[in-house]
Image (cartoon, rainbow, N blue to C red; front, side, top):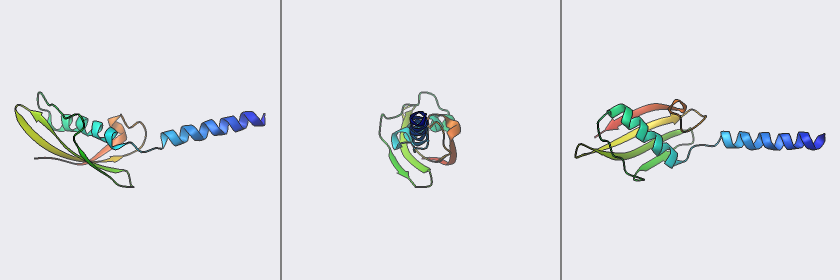
Length: 102
């Protein structure tokens, strides 16, 4: 019985560790593209594969800067977003703090 409790405790700790990890910058970049699409709403938006700059602070604040091409025009963008926790791939796990294009 002690072995069963020990095994349960180890599995629980592993699940908690996996759930509480912060998203990687590449994952935040994926979300930033979804945010840009929703905010700008232009036809034919094409994003680079992995051209971006990032800053991640210890308080779950991510800043992603990149660009997209649309209608033969390059548009730069910057999004600051706060990771609330949960599944990083869901927009509901993020709060947009600022979004700018130029």
